[in-house]
Length: 357
Image (tube, rainbow, N blue to C red; front, side):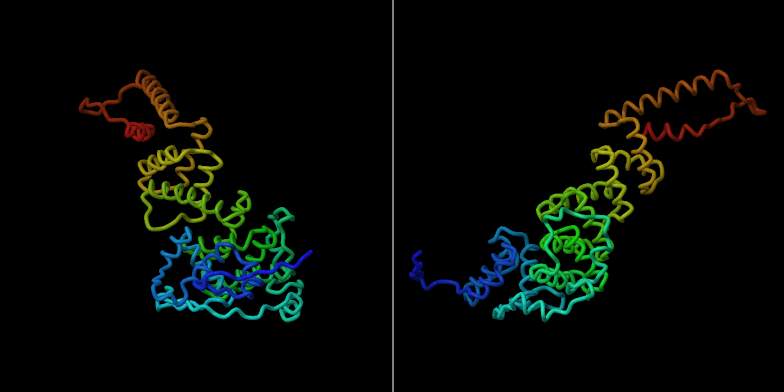
Protein backbone atom coordinates (compact mmCIF):
# COMPACT_ATOMS: atom_id res chain seq x y z
CA UNK A 1 0.00 0.00 0.00
CA UNK A 2 1.38 3.39 -0.99
CA UNK A 3 2.14 6.01 1.63
CA UNK A 4 -0.19 9.01 1.59
CA UNK A 5 1.46 12.36 1.04
CA UNK A 6 -0.26 15.24 2.81
CA UNK A 7 0.19 18.76 1.47
CA UNK A 8 -0.68 21.90 3.38
CA UNK A 9 -2.46 24.54 1.33
CA UNK A 10 -4.53 25.89 4.20
CA UNK A 11 -4.90 29.60 4.71
CA UNK A 12 -2.61 31.24 7.25
CA UNK A 13 -5.58 32.57 9.22
CA UNK A 14 -5.77 29.38 11.27
CA UNK A 15 -5.86 28.09 14.84
CA UNK A 16 -2.83 26.13 15.95
CA UNK A 17 -3.60 22.91 17.81
CA UNK A 18 -0.77 20.87 19.26
CA UNK A 19 -0.30 17.24 18.28
CA UNK A 20 0.06 16.44 21.97
CA UNK A 21 -3.52 17.57 22.54
CA UNK A 22 -4.87 15.54 19.60
CA UNK A 23 -2.94 12.39 20.44
CA UNK A 24 -3.45 12.27 24.18
CA UNK A 25 -5.99 14.74 25.56
CA UNK A 26 -8.69 14.87 22.91
CA UNK A 27 -9.27 11.11 22.69
CA UNK A 28 -10.27 10.85 26.36
CA UNK A 29 -12.37 14.01 26.58
CA UNK A 30 -16.08 14.55 26.11
CA UNK A 31 -16.84 15.98 22.66
CA UNK A 32 -18.53 19.05 24.14
CA UNK A 33 -15.46 19.74 26.26
CA UNK A 34 -13.27 19.57 23.14
CA UNK A 35 -15.53 22.09 21.40
CA UNK A 36 -15.11 24.54 24.28
CA UNK A 37 -11.33 24.14 24.28
CA UNK A 38 -11.10 24.68 20.50
CA UNK A 39 -13.34 27.72 20.81
CA UNK A 40 -11.01 29.21 23.41
CA UNK A 41 -8.01 28.53 21.17
CA UNK A 42 -9.77 30.22 18.28
CA UNK A 43 -10.25 33.42 20.26
CA UNK A 44 -6.86 33.38 21.98
CA UNK A 45 -5.09 36.76 21.63
CA UNK A 46 -7.86 37.96 19.32
CA UNK A 47 -8.02 41.75 19.84
CA UNK A 48 -11.58 41.86 18.52
CA UNK A 49 -12.78 39.09 20.83
CA UNK A 50 -14.95 39.90 23.82
CA UNK A 51 -15.96 36.60 25.37
CA UNK A 52 -18.37 35.83 28.17
CA UNK A 53 -19.53 32.47 29.43
CA UNK A 54 -22.99 33.29 28.09
CA UNK A 55 -21.60 34.10 24.64
CA UNK A 56 -19.57 30.88 24.52
CA UNK A 57 -22.67 28.88 25.49
CA UNK A 58 -24.77 30.59 22.79
CA UNK A 59 -22.16 30.07 20.07
CA UNK A 60 -21.74 26.38 20.89
CA UNK A 61 -25.47 25.84 21.54
CA UNK A 62 -24.74 24.68 25.09
CA UNK A 63 -25.83 25.82 28.53
CA UNK A 64 -23.59 27.96 30.73
CA UNK A 65 -23.33 25.01 33.13
CA UNK A 66 -21.97 22.87 30.28
CA UNK A 67 -19.32 25.49 29.53
CA UNK A 68 -18.33 25.73 33.20
CA UNK A 69 -18.05 21.94 33.40
CA UNK A 70 -15.71 22.03 30.41
CA UNK A 71 -13.60 24.71 32.10
CA UNK A 72 -13.29 22.63 35.24
CA UNK A 73 -12.43 19.51 33.25
CA UNK A 74 -9.60 21.19 31.35
CA UNK A 75 -8.40 22.80 34.55
CA UNK A 76 -8.20 19.35 36.15
CA UNK A 77 -6.21 18.21 33.09
CA UNK A 78 -3.80 21.09 33.58
CA UNK A 79 -4.62 22.80 30.27
CA UNK A 80 -6.46 25.80 31.74
CA UNK A 81 -5.82 28.14 34.64
CA UNK A 82 -8.98 29.88 35.82
CA UNK A 83 -8.68 33.32 37.41
CA UNK A 84 -11.47 34.14 39.87
CA UNK A 85 -12.57 37.20 41.80
CA UNK A 86 -13.33 37.37 45.52
CA UNK A 87 -16.81 35.95 44.92
CA UNK A 88 -15.40 32.95 43.06
CA UNK A 89 -16.60 34.09 39.64
CA UNK A 90 -14.35 33.43 36.65
CA UNK A 91 -12.78 36.64 35.33
CA UNK A 92 -9.96 35.24 33.21
CA UNK A 93 -8.68 32.09 31.54
CA UNK A 94 -5.05 31.26 30.89
CA UNK A 95 -4.31 28.40 28.51
CA UNK A 96 -1.41 26.24 29.64
CA UNK A 97 1.06 24.29 27.54
CA UNK A 98 0.20 20.66 26.97
CA UNK A 99 2.55 18.62 29.14
CA UNK A 100 4.22 15.42 27.88
CA UNK A 101 1.71 12.64 28.40
CA UNK A 102 2.58 9.84 30.83
CA UNK A 103 2.31 6.34 29.40
CA UNK A 104 0.04 3.75 30.96
CA UNK A 105 2.90 1.61 32.24
CA UNK A 106 4.76 4.48 33.87
CA UNK A 107 1.54 5.88 35.32
CA UNK A 108 0.78 2.60 36.99
CA UNK A 109 4.26 2.53 38.50
CA UNK A 110 4.07 6.08 39.80
CA UNK A 111 0.53 6.05 41.16
CA UNK A 112 0.22 4.89 44.77
CA UNK A 113 -2.23 2.05 45.22
CA UNK A 114 -4.37 1.00 48.13
CA UNK A 115 -4.94 -2.48 49.43
CA UNK A 116 -7.59 -3.01 46.76
CA UNK A 117 -4.92 -2.77 44.07
CA UNK A 118 -6.43 0.38 42.60
CA UNK A 119 -5.26 3.96 43.21
CA UNK A 120 -7.69 6.51 44.74
CA UNK A 121 -9.96 3.66 45.86
CA UNK A 122 -10.31 2.04 49.24
CA UNK A 123 -10.85 -1.69 49.57
CA UNK A 124 -14.44 -1.11 50.73
CA UNK A 125 -15.48 1.14 47.84
CA UNK A 126 -17.06 -1.48 45.63
CA UNK A 127 -18.79 -3.30 48.47
CA UNK A 128 -20.01 -0.32 50.49
CA UNK A 129 -23.27 -0.09 48.54
CA UNK A 130 -23.47 -3.56 47.08
CA UNK A 131 -27.28 -3.68 46.96
CA UNK A 132 -27.33 -1.91 43.60
CA UNK A 133 -25.57 -3.16 40.50
CA UNK A 134 -25.71 -2.33 36.81
CA UNK A 135 -24.98 -4.37 33.67
CA UNK A 136 -21.39 -5.55 33.74
CA UNK A 137 -20.97 -4.86 30.03
CA UNK A 138 -20.74 -1.13 30.80
CA UNK A 139 -18.02 -1.49 33.38
CA UNK A 140 -14.54 -0.07 32.90
CA UNK A 141 -11.91 -1.98 34.92
CA UNK A 142 -10.84 0.20 37.83
CA UNK A 143 -7.20 -0.60 37.28
CA UNK A 144 -7.34 0.69 33.69
CA UNK A 145 -5.59 3.95 32.95
CA UNK A 146 -8.79 5.51 31.59
CA UNK A 147 -10.69 4.71 34.79
CA UNK A 148 -7.97 6.15 37.01
CA UNK A 149 -7.74 9.28 34.91
CA UNK A 150 -11.52 9.84 34.93
CA UNK A 151 -11.79 9.21 38.68
CA UNK A 152 -8.97 11.61 39.42
CA UNK A 153 -10.73 14.25 37.34
CA UNK A 154 -14.06 13.53 39.09
CA UNK A 155 -12.47 13.90 42.54
CA UNK A 156 -11.03 17.25 41.54
CA UNK A 157 -14.34 18.49 40.10
CA UNK A 158 -16.29 17.23 43.13
CA UNK A 159 -14.03 19.23 45.45
CA UNK A 160 -14.79 22.38 43.44
CA UNK A 161 -18.56 21.85 43.66
CA UNK A 162 -18.64 20.70 47.29
CA UNK A 163 -16.11 23.28 48.44
CA UNK A 164 -14.03 20.89 50.52
CA UNK A 165 -11.32 18.26 50.40
CA UNK A 166 -12.94 14.90 49.78
CA UNK A 167 -12.91 12.36 52.58
CA UNK A 168 -12.35 8.67 52.01
CA UNK A 169 -16.13 8.16 52.28
CA UNK A 170 -16.72 10.78 49.59
CA UNK A 171 -14.22 9.14 47.24
CA UNK A 172 -15.65 5.69 47.93
CA UNK A 173 -19.13 6.93 47.02
CA UNK A 174 -17.97 8.50 43.75
CA UNK A 175 -16.05 5.33 42.93
CA UNK A 176 -19.20 3.33 43.62
CA UNK A 177 -21.18 5.48 41.18
CA UNK A 178 -18.50 4.87 38.55
CA UNK A 179 -17.62 1.23 39.15
CA UNK A 180 -20.82 -0.41 40.45
CA UNK A 181 -23.60 1.78 39.03
CA UNK A 182 -21.50 2.21 35.86
CA UNK A 183 -22.40 5.87 35.54
CA UNK A 184 -20.34 7.81 33.01
CA UNK A 185 -18.00 10.51 34.26
CA UNK A 186 -20.22 13.14 32.58
CA UNK A 187 -23.29 11.85 34.39
CA UNK A 188 -21.50 11.76 37.76
CA UNK A 189 -20.30 15.31 37.25
CA UNK A 190 -23.82 16.47 36.40
CA UNK A 191 -25.12 14.57 39.44
CA UNK A 192 -22.76 16.39 41.80
CA UNK A 193 -23.31 19.72 40.07
CA UNK A 194 -27.11 19.56 40.20
CA UNK A 195 -27.13 18.53 43.86
CA UNK A 196 -24.64 21.23 44.85
CA UNK A 197 -26.54 23.93 42.96
CA UNK A 198 -29.63 23.01 44.99
CA UNK A 199 -27.61 23.31 48.24
CA UNK A 200 -27.45 19.56 48.78
CA UNK A 201 -23.74 18.94 49.30
CA UNK A 202 -24.02 15.93 51.57
CA UNK A 203 -22.58 12.81 49.96
CA UNK A 204 -25.44 10.90 51.61
CA UNK A 205 -27.99 12.97 49.68
CA UNK A 206 -25.99 12.71 46.43
CA UNK A 207 -25.83 8.95 46.89
CA UNK A 208 -29.63 8.72 47.25
CA UNK A 209 -30.09 10.66 44.01
CA UNK A 210 -27.56 8.41 42.25
CA UNK A 211 -29.41 5.28 43.39
CA UNK A 212 -32.70 6.79 42.27
CA UNK A 213 -31.26 7.49 38.83
CA UNK A 214 -29.95 3.94 38.60
CA UNK A 215 -33.36 2.52 39.57
CA UNK A 216 -35.05 4.67 36.92
CA UNK A 217 -32.61 3.65 34.20
CA UNK A 218 -31.02 7.07 33.77
CA UNK A 219 -27.76 6.63 31.87
CA UNK A 220 -27.12 9.98 30.17
CA UNK A 221 -27.03 13.64 31.15
CA UNK A 222 -29.92 14.32 28.76
CA UNK A 223 -32.11 11.78 30.56
CA UNK A 224 -31.14 13.24 33.93
CA UNK A 225 -32.04 16.76 32.76
CA UNK A 226 -35.40 15.54 31.49
CA UNK A 227 -36.20 13.93 34.84
CA UNK A 228 -35.00 17.05 36.66
CA UNK A 229 -37.55 19.17 34.79
CA UNK A 230 -40.34 16.85 35.87
CA UNK A 231 -38.97 16.68 39.43
CA UNK A 232 -38.79 20.46 39.80
CA UNK A 233 -42.30 20.88 38.39
CA UNK A 234 -43.80 18.33 40.79
CA UNK A 235 -41.94 19.66 43.83
CA UNK A 236 -42.70 23.30 43.04
CA UNK A 237 -46.40 22.53 42.54
CA UNK A 238 -46.73 20.71 45.88
CA UNK A 239 -44.68 23.20 47.91
CA UNK A 240 -46.54 26.09 46.30
CA UNK A 241 -49.89 24.47 47.13
CA UNK A 242 -48.77 24.34 50.76
CA UNK A 243 -47.55 27.94 50.64
CA UNK A 244 -43.94 26.86 51.23
CA UNK A 245 -41.45 29.28 49.65
CA UNK A 246 -37.69 29.66 49.50
CA UNK A 247 -36.61 26.04 49.93
CA UNK A 248 -36.67 22.68 48.28
CA UNK A 249 -38.35 19.56 49.65
CA UNK A 250 -36.77 17.56 52.47
CA UNK A 251 -36.01 13.91 51.82
CA UNK A 252 -39.12 12.76 53.70
CA UNK A 253 -41.26 15.24 51.75
CA UNK A 254 -39.68 14.15 48.50
CA UNK A 255 -40.56 10.53 49.24
CA UNK A 256 -44.22 11.54 49.68
CA UNK A 257 -44.22 13.46 46.38
CA UNK A 258 -42.65 10.50 44.61
CA UNK A 259 -45.24 8.18 46.18
CA UNK A 260 -48.16 10.34 45.02
CA UNK A 261 -46.89 10.92 41.47
CA UNK A 262 -45.22 7.59 40.71
CA UNK A 263 -46.71 4.92 42.98
CA UNK A 264 -50.25 6.30 43.09
CA UNK A 265 -50.02 7.82 39.61
CA UNK A 266 -52.02 10.92 40.56
CA UNK A 267 -51.96 14.00 38.35
CA UNK A 268 -50.82 17.29 39.84
CA UNK A 269 -54.35 18.75 39.91
CA UNK A 270 -55.54 15.92 42.17
CA UNK A 271 -52.52 16.35 44.46
CA UNK A 272 -53.15 20.10 44.61
CA UNK A 273 -56.77 19.47 45.66
CA UNK A 274 -55.58 17.20 48.47
CA UNK A 275 -53.10 19.87 49.60
CA UNK A 276 -55.84 22.52 49.56
CA UNK A 277 -58.11 20.36 51.71
CA UNK A 278 -55.23 19.74 54.08
CA UNK A 279 -54.70 23.48 54.61
CA UNK A 280 -58.47 23.99 55.08
CA UNK A 281 -58.68 21.24 57.69
CA UNK A 282 -55.40 21.71 59.60
CA UNK A 283 -54.47 25.34 58.76
CA UNK A 284 -50.89 24.26 58.12
CA UNK A 285 -48.87 22.14 55.66
CA UNK A 286 -49.00 18.46 56.53
CA UNK A 287 -47.64 15.85 54.16
CA UNK A 288 -48.96 13.12 56.47
CA UNK A 289 -52.54 14.45 56.35
CA UNK A 290 -52.38 14.89 52.57
CA UNK A 291 -51.07 11.35 52.26
CA UNK A 292 -54.06 10.04 54.21
CA UNK A 293 -56.43 11.85 51.80
CA UNK A 294 -54.65 10.58 48.70
CA UNK A 295 -54.40 7.04 50.09
CA UNK A 296 -58.17 7.04 50.56
CA UNK A 297 -58.70 8.34 47.03
CA UNK A 298 -56.38 5.67 45.71
CA UNK A 299 -58.55 2.99 47.35
CA UNK A 300 -61.62 4.63 45.81
CA UNK A 301 -59.93 4.41 42.38
CA UNK A 302 -59.92 8.16 41.81
CA UNK A 303 -58.56 9.10 38.38
CA UNK A 304 -59.93 12.59 37.76
CA UNK A 305 -61.22 15.58 39.72
CA UNK A 306 -64.78 14.66 38.77
CA UNK A 307 -64.31 11.37 40.64
CA UNK A 308 -63.57 13.38 43.79
CA UNK A 309 -66.73 15.43 43.29
CA UNK A 310 -68.75 12.22 42.99
CA UNK A 311 -67.25 10.93 46.24
CA UNK A 312 -68.12 14.23 47.93
CA UNK A 313 -71.73 14.07 46.73
CA UNK A 314 -72.15 10.48 47.90
CA UNK A 315 -70.60 11.36 51.25
CA UNK A 316 -72.96 14.31 51.78
CA UNK A 317 -76.01 12.23 50.82
CA UNK A 318 -74.98 9.52 53.25
CA UNK A 319 -74.42 11.98 56.07
CA UNK A 320 -77.68 13.76 55.34
CA UNK A 321 -79.57 10.47 55.52
CA UNK A 322 -77.89 9.59 58.81
CA UNK A 323 -78.75 12.98 60.33
CA UNK A 324 -82.36 12.62 59.27
CA UNK A 325 -82.58 9.25 61.03
CA UNK A 326 -81.04 10.74 64.19
CA UNK A 327 -83.39 13.74 64.08
CA UNK A 328 -86.48 11.52 63.93
CA UNK A 329 -85.39 9.13 66.66
CA UNK A 330 -83.67 11.47 69.10
CA UNK A 331 -85.94 13.47 71.48
CA UNK A 332 -85.40 17.20 71.61
CA UNK A 333 -83.94 18.32 74.95
CA UNK A 334 -85.17 21.65 76.24
CA UNK A 335 -83.79 23.88 78.96
CA UNK A 336 -85.72 25.54 81.79
CA UNK A 337 -86.83 28.40 79.54
CA UNK A 338 -88.25 26.04 76.94
CA UNK A 339 -85.58 26.96 74.37
CA UNK A 340 -84.10 24.21 72.26
CA UNK A 341 -80.47 23.57 73.06
CA UNK A 342 -77.96 23.51 70.25
CA UNK A 343 -76.44 20.15 69.51
CA UNK A 344 -73.30 19.43 67.52
CA UNK A 345 -71.78 16.32 66.11
CA UNK A 346 -68.19 15.86 64.97
CA UNK A 347 -69.26 15.10 61.41
CA UNK A 348 -70.37 18.71 60.94
CA UNK A 349 -66.75 19.79 60.73
CA UNK A 350 -66.16 17.46 57.82
CA UNK A 351 -69.33 18.68 56.12
CA UNK A 352 -68.16 22.28 56.41
CA UNK A 353 -64.89 21.30 54.83
CA UNK A 354 -66.62 19.66 51.86
CA UNK A 355 -69.11 22.52 51.44
CA UNK A 356 -66.27 25.04 51.30
CA UNK A 357 -65.08 23.57 47.97
